[in-house]
Length: 382
Ligand code: NAD
Image (tube, rainbow, N blue to C red):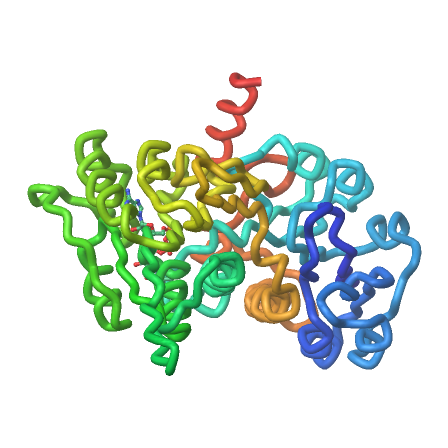
C-alpha cells in the first residue's frame, strides 16, 4: 500500500501534509511512502530529509496519483488530479466539504473515500487529531504579530528617561482557541487586553490570561449549543454586542477578531461606522475573513485602509508560519492515519465515531447529510 505526499496545488499554500518526522513514523511501521519532489521545501523539509525518513521521491506527479492508495493533504487535490485517483483510495485533509462540496465532485464520482479534518468530532479520543485547534493556535499568535508589526506604536509600557510610553490597547473578539492565543500573545508583548465573547464560559478563561472581559447583558439568552460552541444569535442580541464593541473600539489600537459560528457565515461584529469611530493608524486583523469576516469592510484575502484604519483580511494566515503549522497539522494527520492504517492494512471502520463524523464520501456517494445539503444549496445558488 502506497501513501503519497504531494506538493500542495493551492497558490497561497506553503504547508505540507506530512513532515519527515511523520513520514518516519509511517515507514517505521512498514508503510511505503512516496513524496513528490520539493513538496516540503516551503516548510523547511528537503527531498533528502524525506529520503532519510525512508520515503522515495517522485518527480512524476501523474503517475504518483494514479498509483497511491492514501493521500494525506492540506487542501483537497484539484479536480484534474482527482480524476486520476484510484477508486477506493483515501484523501484526508482540510477538504472544505461544507463550503465548497462541488470541488470534491470528481473524487466522489471516482469512488474515493473522503475524510475531512474539519469534521473530526471534538471528543476526548480525537483531541490529538484536532487540526482546527492546531491551526487556530497558530493563527491567533500570528495575527497579533502582524498587528504589532504594522502598528505605529510600541506594545509595552516603557518608562524611559525621555518619558513614559503607555501600553497599546488590544481588543480580541471571540475568545475560542484563536482568541485565547491572541490574548496570551498580546499580553506577553505587554499590551492591555480586553475581550468579548457570547459564551459566558469564555469570561473566566479571558480573565485567567490577565485580560478584561467585556460583559454584555443578553437577558439570560442561551448562547451555547450542546457541544460548547456559540449559537447563531438573534439580530437584537448581535446588536447589543456590536454596541459594546463600538464603544471599546474608540480607544483601542488593535482589534483581533476571531468570532465564528460553525457552519454559518461569520457574525458581523464591527460595522463600518465602528471602524470610522476608531483612531487613525489603528489596526484590525480579521481572522474570520475566510468565512466572510467579522468586520463589515473586510475584504477577504486583502489588506485595505478605511478611514485611516488598516484592516487585514488574511485568507490563509497559517501559511505564513509553515514550519510549525505543518508540524502540528502533520501530527494531527498521523494520529488520524493510525486509526485507518492498522496491521499494515487500510481499514475504514465507518462504525468508529471519529470516522463516521469525518467521512464525507464513500463508495461513490456523499455519506454526510450536512455535506449533501450543502451540495444542493451550492447547485441552487450557481
Ligand atoms: P470557533 O472558531 O467556532 O469560534 C471562535 C469564537 O467565536 C468562539 O469562542 C465563539 O463563542 C465566538 N463567537 C461566536 N459568535 C460570536 C459573537 N456573535 N460575538 C462574539 N463571539 C462570538 O470556536 P473554537 O475556537 O473552535 O472553539 C469553541 C469552543 O470549543 C471553545 O469553548 C473551545 O475551548 C472548545 N473546544 C473544545 C475542544 C475539545 O476538544 N473538546 C477543542 C477545541 C475547542
